[in-house]
Image (cartoon, rainbow, N blue to C red; front, side):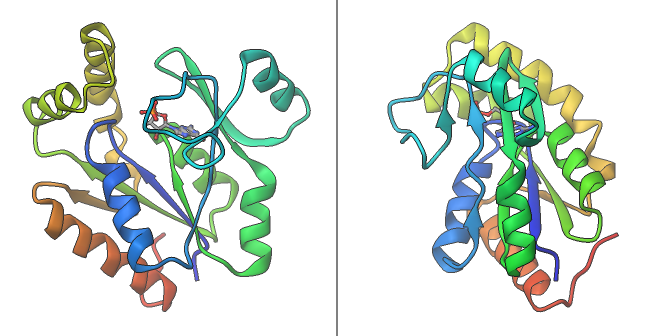
Length: 191
Ligand code: 5GP
């Protein structure tokens, strides 16, 4: 069984909604709570969505080698605790990781036997812009930065174990749940 499911997608592609839907159906799957220096959005809870920390605290985590991987995304630090990953593997539990493409590739490289990577594509860049505007959490400038990054992230999709399109949320939910079920039962294994 693959213990680590690394999910990447350009932000605003519906990845968070999909991951939450998956957790509702399979509550036994844990969620890796990343550290970030980004400011907390009003709908987010510290310790649940992210551990929100200062840049100084983040740099200390890097120095102490507490992180399995970290990235500077859109000008903020994001990183994953090494111990959360290693506990999941040694306790035989499944852990969901939501991270940028480089993060997923890094986890795959560090834990090749234990990682299955999934890339979620939004139907089009037009849709993505619309979703980001609707979400209302980013300024116009931030949205443009995120869209530029979208083009770069799309180049990584061939390196993932599975690529899916979030054209219709219900279809995508079913697809994701099926994949994870197959991983759990050992039907699907990835490379
Ligand atoms: P957001 O600010 O929209 O929550 O996240 C921005 C980007 O950072 C998203 O692509 C998200 O998946 C990514 N991200 C979140 N946590 C981590 C992490 O621990 N490591 C890496 N490499 N990326 C992360």
